[in-house]
Image (cartoon, rainbow, N blue to C red):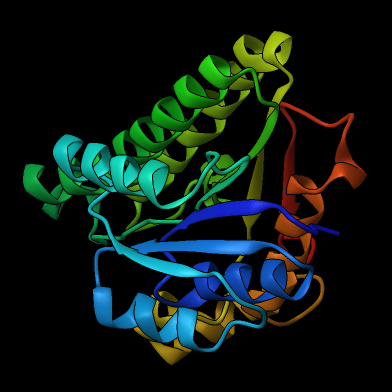
Length: 243
């Protein structure tokens, strides 16, 4: 679905981000994999099918880091990536009454500010070069329902969703699409730390009675960045097993 496409993916060092890189590479894309953990993202690139993929160390919450990485990307390749997936995200879970301001701010810095910085940077380049593009931002199903112990994370993902819809409205005249995927509970390192009794509770209220695997999220993301979804923008797609 993505022959010849250059795709930039944040949070590519593991979990959903790594799965997205694998599926898009399988579909013919050249992957520019970025993550704050360089060892993890190099491991991702090493397992990708095809050639030409590169890894970058990126702190999405840091303006200088984003600027420097994209400067390098625009030097490394003759044209900017026309596919962007913002999958970088963190949690700092705690009950609201016990949550520190630092933990609240850290989640917004990565999940919201990071998505903004990457999206703005690539959109400026695509508009300047008069190129169309497709952006997918990773939200979360908890942005629509809330979740105990995740007031910061749920709020940040709600912000990502509405930010993405606004980007879709502004960028439509430039033929740059922006959509949102809302994963439900997915088996990753982020959910591995959830106590087993809590996992079992959530499985019991998910109609499909299980967590997703990362590839199931990645397949939907790949469809949305491909030309097969050319008339879809500003849309949120839950991939949540019916939760």
